[in-house]
Every structure is written in structure tokens, then in C-alpha cells.
Length: 382
Ligand SMILES: NC(=O)C1=CN([C@@H]2O[C@H](COP(=O)(O)OP(=O)(O)OC[C@H]3O[C@@H](n4cnc5c(N)ncnc54)[C@H](OP(=O)(O)O)[C@@H]3O)[C@@H](O)[C@H]2O)C=CC1
Ligand SMILES: N[C@@H](CC=O)C(=O)O
Ligand code: NA
Image (cartoon, rainbow, N blue to C red; front, side):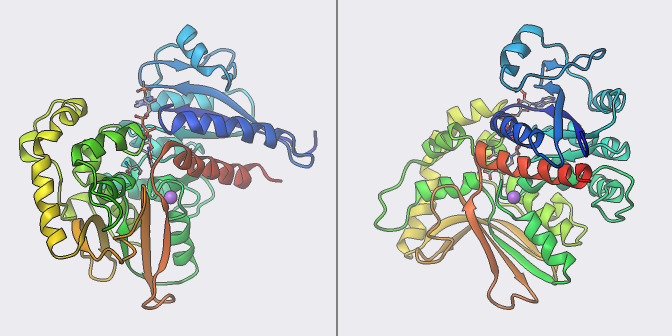
């Protein structure tokens, strides 16, 4: 078949984001295979959860995207380490671009992105750890990726749109601003779907109801798939700080996570909880503290919202609670909406604003699927 190409795919992580990603992938693979001029055949040869994986070292049998769950239960074996996944993909006996989709939040998988990329394997992920972890890891990734600093044409590609604002076009927009020569001065807004949901529920604008107890809202946020695998990573402000670090580094700053002042919403007494489950169980005991903050803001006619900002010129950044007028765009956010304002030279004093749901399985998976298609277009289109 003229112009036909193969894509060899390894998928690591099939949880709240990974499952809807697989559903989207099923439709995408069917569509790509039917292209009359440039059919692309996506072959999933590795699929892993934390304790079990589907792959065949000898036959490279493809994973059935419809029955993967049953197959995993019936014939799953121990997962490969990330470097073994790289070797497994590299040894696949036919040509075709190799791609790893990392749908975990595991820093040990993230630490191996340079290993994948150096071997020409592209990485697509919503996992924030590699881009907001040690600066050296970030530098290493962007120095080897084709779409990184050198555009050397040798390594694989890296795309991680869903690591900020889930499926919202945040990273693509920032990249477009920068590559076309705009000067980004400040980025601010609500970066957490969980925090947005919590404060919209706990302290709605006047006239929109009394509001829910804080700990009860946290449980709903978790059940709705908005939180990180461990909800403490949202409540301690780290998730927002990670997103700011990612945007700051793309903007050219050499920022480390430790450089951001972060207001944690975890009560001191719960810092030592052994698990996220224990934390969730005990959080309601501290609802009165949140109620006090709420009452004080209410007295001044304000609402509380959890925001982050980074001043690219001065290098100042912060993450925490702020009071807003109920009529302010941040005060009036709904659901799990993020709102992100880019202040740039071209846009002047009125920022470029992106707003919409910023957490949840389907919309995060959408960002991952779109990134995957981006890599396929770059590598398989004749
Ligand atoms: N949920 C959201 O709204 C958003 C999430 N993200 C990011 O998406 C990623 C996934 O989040 P989410 O799906 O909610 O998390 P989940 O906890 O629901 O799923 C994580 C999956 O990764 C698997 N996993 C963890 N470690 C490993 C490992 N070392 N090897 C193989 N598999 C592993 C887990 O295995 P097991 O099934 O065995 O537990 C699980 O299948 C995170 O990085 C998160 O920050 C980004 C934007 C929004
Ligand atoms: N836990 C995160 C998920 C997306 O990044 C959030 O609530 O925003
Ligand atoms: Na995004």
C-alpha cells in the first residue's frame, strides 16, 4: 500500500486518564488505518499498570484495545522497567515510529524520558513530573528532543499538553506566542481543576447557595477524577506550583519547584498521615478552620479562590488563596474551570485568556490523544 506506515506504541498507566485515552485511541486507530492516501497502522505492543503488564517478548502480539482489561487479568505479567520498555520497542522487528504514552504520575517513569527520546522514541504524556522536577531533567529532555531546544532531528518528540490545564490548549498557545516572537511577561490564573471545584463548591458567589463543607467537596473532587492520584498533591499546592514551573521553563526561566512560595491547605496535624485515604478520612475534623477563612472573606464581600502567578520579567511567583470580588472572572468561575491569563508584549494590558474545564479523565485524555496524533503526523506523513 503506497505511503502506509506503522506506529509502535507502548502505553504505561491505565487509570482515570488512561482508560478514556484507550477509548479515544480505538477510534483514532480505526480512522488512521482507513486513510486512502496515507494509512497508518497503530500497533499497541505494551500496556502496563503498576503491578501487571501485557506484552509478548517473542511475538510482539498486539494488545486488543477492546478486551485489554480481561487480557490483563488473564495473562498479565510483571511490568518492564522504563529502560526495558525502550529496549523492547527498539527491538521490534519492523520499521515504524516508536511512541511511549505515559499516563502515570510516576517520577521514575518520567526520569527515563531522555532514555526514550535519545533512542528516537517519542513521548506523549499528561505527567507533570519530568517537566517540573529537577531542572537537569528538563534540560536533558529539551536538549535531546526533536522539538526541544536544538531541533537536531535525531531524537524522538516530546509532547505534554495535558500537563497544564488538562486538554485546554495552554502549552501549545504559550509555545506559539514564543516561537512567533512575542514576549511573555506574566502568566496568572486558576491552574487547578480540583481547587477551582473546591472553592466554587465551598464558597459559591452570593445568590448561588450556601456552599458545601470543605472536606465533603474534596471527596467529591476525588470521586469525579479531578484530583491527583493522591489528593494531598492538590491540597498542598504542589500541583499548581508544578504547572507554573512548566510554563516558566517553557518561557525560558530556570525555575525550580522549591523557588515558589506555596500556601498549603493541608492542616499541620494531617501532615503525617500515612496515606491519602487516611488524610481524606480525617480532613472533616478541620472544616471549622476553612469556615473561619470563609466568614472573614464574606464579611468583606469577597470570595476565596486558589490562584497562581508567575512574573516572567521579575522572576516572582506565588501560589495560594486570594480574595476576589464575586464579579471578577476568577471569582465567578464554575465547576472545575481553569482560567489562565497570558500577559504579553503583543497583547498589551488585556491578556490572552483561556478558560474551561481543567481536570477530568476524558478532557485530559483528549489532550494526550491530540499530542499522539501530532507525533504521528510529524513522523508518518509522506
Ligand atoms: N485526572 C486529571 O484530571 C488529570 C491528570 N493529569 C495527569 O495524568 C496522569 C494520570 O492521572 P490519573 O489517570 O488521574 O491517575 P490514576 O491514579 O487514576 O492512574 C494512574 C495509572 O498509572 C498506573 N501506574 C502508576 N505507576 C506506574 C508504573 N510505574 N508503571 C505502570 N503503571 C503505573 C496506575 O496503575 P494501577 O492501575 O495499578 O494503579 C494507574 O493505572 C497524572 O500524571 C496526572 O497528574 C493531568 C491533567 C489532568
Ligand atoms: N489534579 C489536577 C489534574 C490536572 O492537572 C487538577 O485538579 O487540576
Ligand atoms: Na493543556
